Every structure is written in C-alpha cells, then in structure tokens.
Image 1 (cartoon, rainbow, N blue to C red):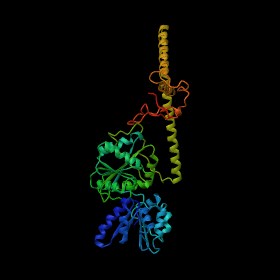
Image 2: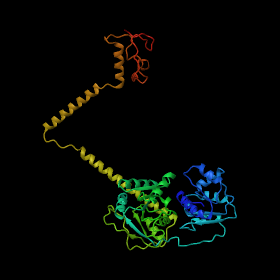
Image 3: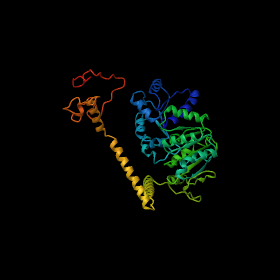
Image 4: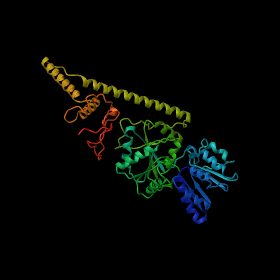
Length: 458
C-alpha cells in the first residue's frame, strides 16, 4: 500500500494490526522522518503487507533493502493527491518493480479521470467502482461562509473559537508559515493548540496528532497534509482559515468532521483575495454555502460582499483560466501597493515641508537677536571642530610628544615626528593608528632596546 502522507500510512498500519490479530498476517510500515535501521531490520524478516510513502520506499529499494518482485496486489491510496504532490516518477518506479501479473487498486474520495489519466497506462482493463459522486459532500456536515477583510482575518480566528467553542476543532491553512502564525496567535489568546505540516519532524507530527486525539489540546492547526483520509473521532467543526486553491481539497477538509454518522459543520473565511476560489468550490458542489451569523465579530472595514441570492457557476474554470485570473489579481494587488506607497511618501513630504517653514518675526530686533544667536552657535561649532583633532593629527601630536621627552627637549633635532613614516614610528601601525598595548602585557623598560636597536633615553 502506497500513501502520500506519513499520518495516513500510520493510520492504515493501526487498522492492519487490528485485523492481523485475527488473520495472522504481518505488516511493516516504512515512512520518512524515521531512522532507516529499524525499517531495514523489519523488512529482512519479511511481511505480508507493506505500507509505505513513495519517497522512503524508493530509498529502501535503491539501497537493496526492499524487493517488490513478489507483490500480488498493489494499492495506491489517495492516488490523485500523490500526483498533485509530484510523485508520478516515484509511482512509475514502484509499479515497474512489481510483477506484471498483479492487481492494481486506486483509491480516492475524489478520483478524477482527468487527474489520474497520466497513470491509466499502469492498469489493464480497469473497472470503476463509485460509492458517491466526486463532488458530493456528507449530508451530516453543515457548511457556512464568513466574509472578512484581509486586515481583520488574523484576529477573527480567536473570536470565532471563543464564540462557537474551541473544543475539538481543526483549522486548515494554505501554507506552513500561516499554520505556525495561527498557532502563535491562538496560544496568546489562551487557546491550547498543536500544529502539523510538512516542516515538522515525524515525532512532532505524531505528538500533535496524539495530543489532539486524546483531548489534551483543543485545536489542531494543519495544512492539507491532514486533509486526506485521516480519521479523527468527535471533531466538532472545521475552520478553513484559507480557502484552498483546489476545490477538491475543500471537500476533503470538511470531511474531517461529521464522520461515522456524527453531525458536524464547517466555516470558511472568505476575503477579496480568495473570493474566486470560493466561487469555484460552489461551482464544483453545484450548491451555495450559507452565510455565518457574524454578530459580535469584527469583520474589518471592507469585508467582501457575498450575495445571499447568488447562483453557483455551471462549471469550474480550467487551469488556463485560473492562471489568467491569478495574474490579473496579482497585477491589481501590485498596483494597489504602489498607489498606497506613493500616497504615503506624498504625505511625508507635505509634513516635512510644513515643519521646515519658519514663523515670521515681527520686529527687526528679534531678527537681530536671532542672527546673533546663529552667529554664536556657528562660532561655538567652529571651536568644537578646531578643538577636535583628526585621527592623523592626533597620531602626529602623540608621536611628537614621545620624541620630545618629558622635559620638552627634542631627542633628535634632525628628524621630527612628521618626517618619520608611519610604518617606522614606535607603536604605530602602517595605517597611522596607534597600537594600544594588550592588557596584562609588561611594558618595555626604559633601558631596553627599541625597534631600531637604540636604547631609550634615561
């Protein structure tokens, strides 16, 4: 069995062990994020069922620790997701290592013919078994949408959790960075939570999932790595902090609640930036989502308008249309940033010009006193500049004092300090900067020889 995520592989392993107690079969699980040694040792003993993620299975095959030449049944779980994650080359390598006489099974809640078309050559005369339509959602999940301004979105999450209850909630974000940011904000709001995404270590991901399943934390923040196939009991509701780019991921996300006949609900934050993706979700499902009661919530100054009487689009736009739409939105956002920046700079320049204007003086006496003050300030500034020697003059003055000695007599009348190059002056580097003695180092005695071989004067 090949699965796209470690969590899903471990969940399958747990079910296999329960069944194997009665059937006598053995199973081995190999996933990334864990050491190779224990997995190699387990494979040496052999197994009836092998559960693996594509990357780790390829690594073990290349190391000669795993052979698939006796596989009778090959299962590709969440096949469309593995293709989205770029596992197509790995899948072809795995299939190529299995015997031709085998049975191949592809599983997914949203198995789209367009997405799996690139691997249809791996199966022969396939039969399609469909329990429910790809675009269908569970009847036990009530769906709501909440329009919000972009600047108020971050603070809104804690408000919703405190209003609707923060127990047994999964929050989905689009990126790993946003998942970590959501966790930090919820912790500051005194809401216990854990986070799961691709950058977390395997131990961290297992601990977070175990803590949420055991009820030790109330909220689990995750990326779409947790959206597929994970079965967690008693999830009250799901929050889509970010609208997913792929409408199919929305169906998988909200499927984490309302499982096993239980009733659940989902809430999706909708901003102006992801309003188009929200429309694509409704077009995929063929129905609209109800608006959430926003009483007591701060939605910002300009939340996006969602027409309550809207009708979903007849079809989801293709990849080219989405790409064109995304570029137009990015161009509009860049233009808005430029306008805001130019306006801010203009305001700063106006404030600076107002601050530079001098109030008019009413009498010539006042102007005279002001002039005298300015002249006095100028003279004091000149004195400061004259009193403060430059580094070069300071070095020369110091060298002159050393050459003259304590009684003011010149040690060498033919050569003064200015004529001696900086590189040959005692205690001065080639740059003309005096070399200070290191702490704890004894000074040279007056009778000792200097760097020219002469003895210092007594």
